[in-house]
Image 1 (tube, rainbow, N blue to C red):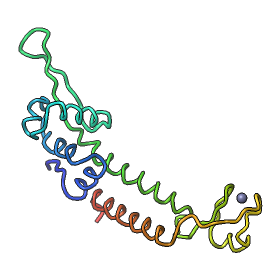
Image 2 (cartoon, rainbow, N blue to C red; image 1 turned 60 degrees about the horizontal axis):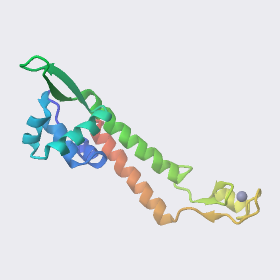
Image 3 (tube, helix red, strand yellow; image 1 turned 90 degrees about the vertical axis):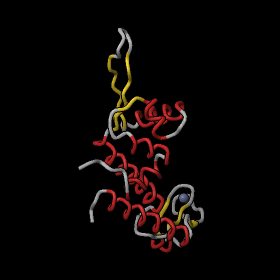
Image 4 (cartoon, rainbow, N blue to C red; image 1 turned 135 degrees about the vertical axis):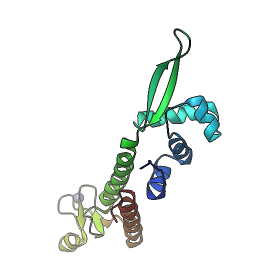
Length: 169
Ligand SMILES: [Zn+2]
């Protein structure tokens, strides 16, 4: 089956890389010179080369040197690395999800209370009468209920995107 950049995978790549990057990955359906690719995507040569270098750093494309018609001349062909693209998308989602759960602390939606030296959940804050036992300072909420709802809804969106991207329907 041909590799297609579409649907949820396309959404994730556009979010993490940008739409020009996705265009280039889509058009790179066989090994290609960067000049040929520039014509196909109708972007400046320098822009295409800079995007290709970025994708190369992320191991999403590879570069192959082949001998040209003349002695000592070489042509450079770019290919997309299909085997890495899904993995890249999945890692991007996981790292975003990890950061968001970190923002929630306990991960169960509890409102967190903190001072300069520690962070505790609501139950512990009540037990401590909202005063830190170590430094004696008042414990204050870190996130408002609205912030927590926003984070949770972003987590749901990313999980849904991940499920669709990996085809786990
Ligand atoms: Zn403290």
